[in-house]
Every structure is written in C-alpha cells, then in structure tokens.
Image 1 (cartoon, one colour):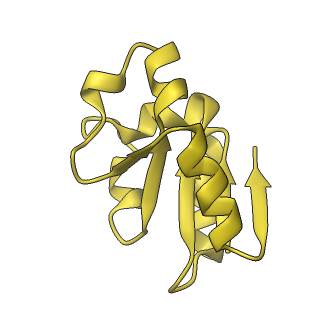
Image 2 (cartoon, rainbow, N blue to C red):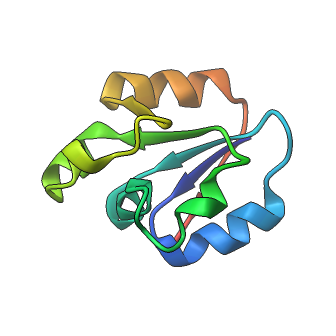
Image 3 (cartoon, one colour):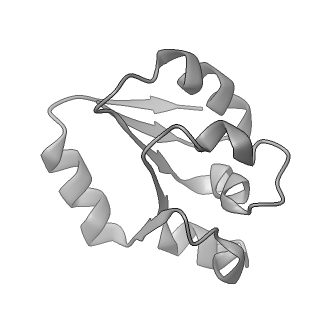
Length: 91
C-alpha cells in the first residue's frame, strides 16, 4: 500500500498502520518531517519513505531533506501510484 501523508500529525497513525512492503510518500506540509532534526523524524526510520520534491522546494527545505530518504518528482509520484495497487491519503 502507498501511504500519501499530507501532515506531520498523520504520521503517528501511519506508523501504526504501516506494514512490510508498504511505502510512504510525504507531500504538502508533511515534507517538514524529512529534515533529520525534526522531532518526528525518527518515526520514519523503519519505513520506506519518499518525499515529493516539488513540495519540499515550495517550502524551502529541499536542501535539508535527509539523504536517507528518496526524493521523487511528479513523474515518480505517478510511478509510485502505478506500482501500488492501493493507496491511502492521510491528512
């Protein structure tokens, strides 16, 4: 399953629902969590996480995205949705 996360607050719920083989995509305001100094960053460690490049750029934190995370553009977003037969948006 692809978990599309819009807010940092939704990450605690996602971490409870996350299963092996799932993937998380941080979009909108949740991209702030991709910074290693963010208090919620440790929640991401056991998950397969990608960050939407355009949202990180729009919020001025693209250069602060942790190198341990995958950055995808809109084409990558489409590829993720095609790869996962189900997706859920968390806000």
